[in-house]
Image (cartoon, rainbow, N blue to C red):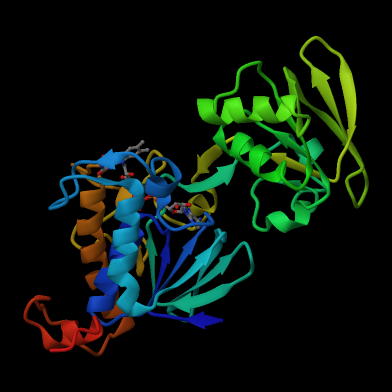
Length: 338
Ligand SMILES: Cc1cc2nc3c(=O)[nH]c(=O)nc-3n(C[C@H](O)[C@H](O)[C@H](O)COP(=O)(O)OP(=O)(O)OC[C@H]3O[C@@H](n4cnc5c(N)ncnc54)[C@H](O)[C@@H]3O)c2cc1C
């Protein structure tokens, strides 16, 4: 059981900056995100796009903003729990008990929900297809590409992820790329590359086909794919990879006894606390009169929520207002030697 002052749900820009604000007021936190990387929408949806309205930064990409936020919290050695979705929250002895999809358990007086528009989840095959072999032979992301070496892999999808992985895995695996349309959506350079690989017999491509069924009990044996005009083909494969993009789901957040208004959480703008004592909501997921869904608003909300957490984490101490420029305590927390 991990015991900490604050658990932050969501490693988007808002959660990251809130961790900084907690660090400079002397509170410990751990951050959980369902994605396998840090950065929320900035890294998942627009890593290369320039952002022009971050205060004092005339232009930076989603990835640069994320990297700067990560650098800014380095002094606090914050632990991230990635690829874990927070499933359960319940009150336990005046604190909050938190449990993730990987059964990691936390106990904390505070939770900051910086969950954006919900957790990003891969779009999947139908339950009938996915159910028994998901996470074994049917996968929606790749953590260790060495498992595919010298194996037969069917990759479904027509966007950048499907094409990039088809190109990469074709070096050491027997790859078949299957897409339900004739045209691929990925970058033209990747489309050219897979056509070239097909010509050189380094991978097979079937367009206008979709998954029909999978065969195999504990282990995948083969898949059947169906052409839009009805023809069915059977492919002997060891793994199936589905890359159909991500959907965003508020998911378990709706079950935690919080007031929810049109998929957002109403908060008190004094400290961004929700209707539950010790649970705060910041960033895109919170709502209040005049809310702007911008990164800069999330930063302000995180700063106030961090101060709101203080009274539950250190009930016997008074929080003093200090400037980072002049406070010795803040500078020592940041590891700055004078
Ligand atoms: C294309 C595009 C361009 C944009 N351009 C700008 C811009 O120019 N300027 C600007 O200010 N804003 C811009 N935005 C909006 C900005 O990206 C969002 O306001 C910002 O990302 C919100 O940050 P957040 O930290 O609140 O949430 P997010 O970035 O959405 O991060 C939330 C994180 O919480 C995780 N999460 C949710 N639920 C759970 C759970 N139960 N368990 C574990 N993890 C969970 C999610 O996986 C996600 O990683 C843009 C958005 C898009 C899509």
